[in-house]
Length: 238
Image (cartoon, rainbow, N blue to C red; front, side):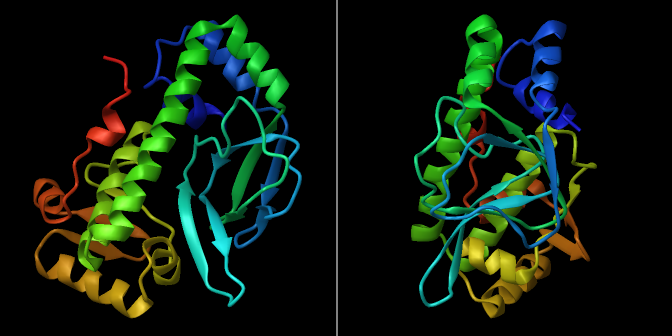
């Protein structure tokens, strides 16, 4: 189950076999969660860093009126917090979208491993910089992209992210998100999500059958969605 985590971090540093064994050893303390459950809630005092080993999770904020904004998605191999430290209190919640397996790692343990192994430290910093870049891009998406551009941009980003961990088959991948999930993530109603999907399909760019997304024209989808993959590649080692 730790292979997605290791596979992702290979993009950030030249990891030796010993480095990879050390990373796998971090993933021994695991919890399993059903879909639509909270791993941590806003206001909680976190005690460990969470690594998503299997399944999809999300960071979200819930408003007093019951509306939810998904801030970011966590895919297999993703760290849910920076490795250096933990906040005193959670200012957001971490919830599951599918069945999820999460590893719990002490910040002190992972920092000790990083100090002893420079390539692991480099890979962990790469992971943090990548998360920050995706956060900036999300602000641009919510502030300036149209509804169909938002959805198309998400399809493009997921294609790159899932490909890093070997979860893309050609130009297709599994995306276990409902239209309600997509609306919460992209700041759209389910009506606009459905309409945007129809527009992308009619343009011959993408299709969805159940949970499977197939990109029919990658360059066309990137152009239509104003997607530039540079923010996902800037920190990747040559």
